[in-house]
Amino acid sequence: MLRTSVASSNLASVGYDQLSSTLEVQFTSGHIYQYAGVPESVFAGLMAAFSKGSYLDAHVKKAGYFCTKIE
Image (tube, rainbow, N blue to C red; front, side, top):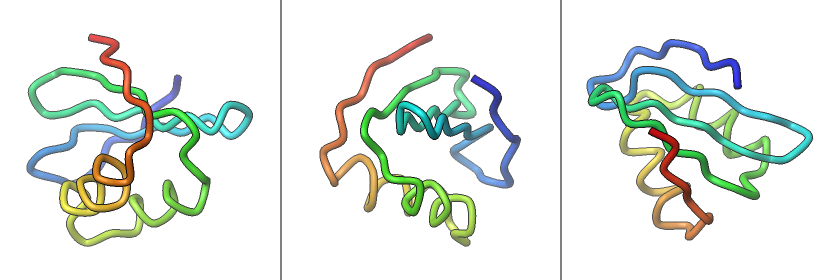
């Protein structure tokens, strides 16, 4: 999945696949996670958020989307 670099102390890059509604996040540690069933509006909110790490925590992790560690 193509990811875009982001300005964040916790996230390195973020990508989104519209067909599968999959959000992919690479953390600054190098670990990559995919979150399934994430609406495009949540991805857009993440990309627009001042604090991307806080937004990811509140609107993706705590929202309970199924998560898979890729690397």
